[in-house]
Image 1 (tube, chains in turn brown, orange):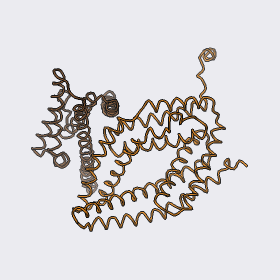
Image 2: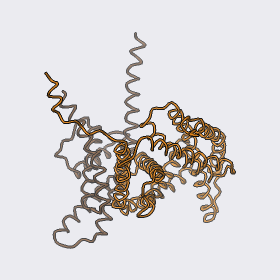
Image 3: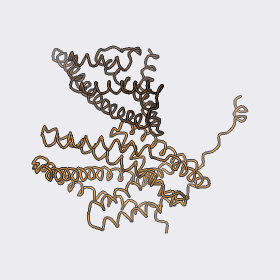
Image 4: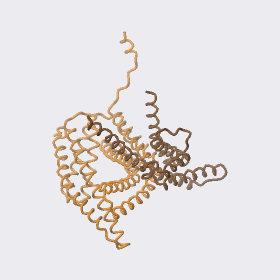
Length: 163
Length: 298
């Protein structure tokens, strides 16, 4: 049991540690590295959303693209009203487009010269997308915990009445 | 049994006041760097606020160190290094505070929605500027400043720091008195706020060096005043922002904003109320500084 607790704490810390690292990479104009770190932060955020939605951890095998597809599917099915409320399809599609764009740049890097301005633009777009996702996630979590509290209090009240 | 072993053990070097002062500065500057890297990515109000608080504390420490006699302006004013970052972060913070106020109103009004979407749009623009300012921020210059602080901290004694604290409090409380005597213009209150922040940071440093009931009293009075001044400043910024938004739209579209005008009036009223509360509080801080026993050296 103790081991499990430690693991979950570590996982939370990883995201917290990654954010300043992405910032440091950005500051030193390592835009490729910054975008790489950003995508792993976005991925972990999406995984958390999936964990909350499906009540089980999606596993490490699920990459960023797969996470996006699954969230899009849940969104279409209206699996949860809060998911539809806070995460716009537009945002999910924009993140998907960004990852595709990033992958294309990585592929092109092998054959051709990519201008710094293009890589910089990609990193900046990633930051803005992450910020949007982060605020959406925060609002989603707020409403999620509110709902949880409501559910718990509604379960407790009838018991008290019978007592 | 254990005594000889204890004697064999190497004794840790004693921490001098200079070391303490240097590490205090280092803690602040590294916390600023961490927060700025965080804020560059997240741009959340919390991270930006933390980075700005650290910066204000660093500014206070710089003026304190200069009073001690450290040669910080050898390579130019140390505050200039942070200028762009500070301004860019401040603008985002102002937008975020305005958005928070509008959200708290919980009104579904098209005018308010238009205003908040305008704020969100400008926030995106400012975030890009903030990222640029972080990229431009020169850490080498910060390292140079750190070097001269390290040099200055070598032979400093606690008594000297307390003496300088004495002068520092007196100087800044005199400035507050001066601004207080002038008209209650926004600029003057803002200057009082800056002076208070400086006193607050140095009082925090002094508290770590010497436990004193007067210093604690001063810190609690400062905290209370800073809360009021902070709220007052947020209202002033919101008022200006609504005003410029209305003027801009009236010129281009000729549209009249009834709800925003009423919100503006409310904000103005709140500003006046807060001003009435904060002025006696700032007087209280000045009177506490006058009362502190070690300040009366005569």
